[in-house]
Amino acid sequence: MVTHLKKRAPTTPCYKETMMKKVSYGDILKATNWLSPVNKISTSHTSSIYIGRFEFDTDLMAIKVFHLDELGSLNNFLMECEVLRNTRHRNLMKEVTLCPTVSLGNDEFKAIIFYFMANGSLDMWVHPKLHKNSPKRRLSLDQRIGIAVDVASALDYMHNQLTPPLIHCDLKPANVLLDYDMTARLGDFGSAKFLSSRIANSEGFISVGGTIGYIAPEYGMGYKISTRCDVYSFGVLLLEMLTGIGPTDAMFTDGMSLQRLVDKE
Image 1 (tube, rainbow, N blue to C red):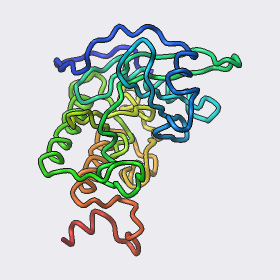
Image 2: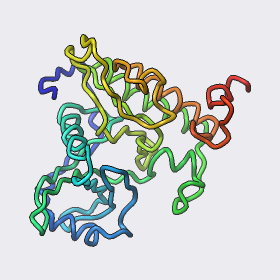
Image 3: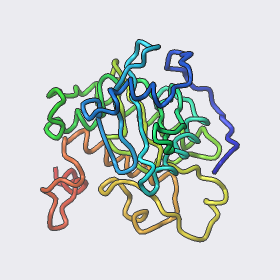
């Protein structure tokens, strides 16, 4: 893992400073009603996110609990910690605190606590029908432009203002979170990679994680990683925001794709 990063440009602090104490496993249980399914707001192969409020803080928190029994989950936690430790930008998610501890059964337990993003994910706004419990809301053109600018700003910081550059590798609407004022913040860096000189000069191929439909075709075949991985995904995200259609929609058959659909229009 990369341990030395040089930040070459100032960034704007966006989260209020907090003196939240180090949280325990018991604190997380109480905050999430004992990890109740009612408090669970999203889940994936490697983690689940719960909404909760700690007794010693008034703000709602998003508590990301890692499924350490699943392959790759620990590496995702370590990568997210590496990114959080070495980045600071108004359009990137920033942790409130970490909780590497053990459960009541003495099993390893790891979680990251973030401030709750009041307006959910971009995916909830672009595809409200797929999120049955979310309000049916629509983005205005100004909001779409603002979100696109926010995500582009985050990518510019990651690709051009960090040394070595940081590649997200899984850019999609579900990983773009929206604050109370609709400021977009890029999150979920479990698949991310720092573009070290060792990787850049390697003659072998680097496996890139990601989601089908957002991965550039060449990277899906194991091509060497570069910032173009995120740029392609960003292009798909822009088309999805404008059309309201995802890249893996059932309508895309017989060689049709989101890109070809837009070209035809």
